[in-house]
Image 1 (cartoon, rainbow, N blue to C red):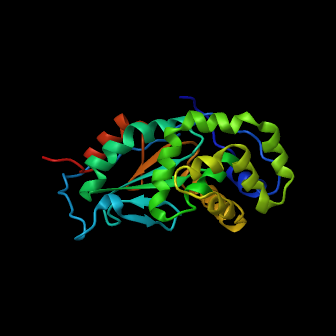
Image 2: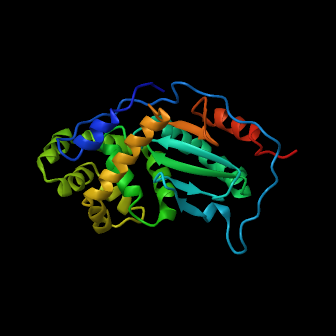
Image 3: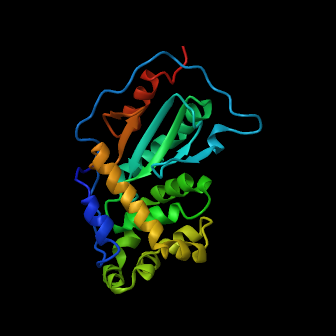
Length: 256
């Protein structure tokens, strides 16, 4: 896994809707200045309300993150992620199943995914995964990460058409990028209709809001790469499940 700094966020938030798009697919990283994870006593499972499960409980947070699990969970794990980040894809493929089955399902841990926009393709995919109902955001993201190689191949297959899209009006620009990179078809095969995708990608106000939230939070929390994890507000050192699971257990998500 390579290490790089993210695209300057203020510049991306402003320029992405005003200038030709460019390919920026360099790697990703964890954290620059990691802090120790919190520790505490073991916490007993918290039952979900009758007729529900925590795995089906989704909340959109004020930070424009999508939280799965008990919104009042005593342990909250936040991931800043990029859809063009191979380390994020690795985490989604290898960690999400045990995270959901062993931790989120108990009501003790909630997992929130927030966007870190590193390039214009991140902005397109962030818009697409947020286009449908809130319950579909994380599943669509995970499916994209599970098909990471195919998506990256599509993104890199037609750079001329991608660059040409920069000459289009903002409400057409991201639609065209998604068309020429195969992203419209990819998400259509997973339940997001082409018409719905085009409508969302023409919503420049929403796209600007996603970019602005990424920009502001990157500065506020000193997030310079992906994936970066926070546990109850403290930065977690490391980017793999082998790093995250022990931190969850130290915080109290364990049986004794």
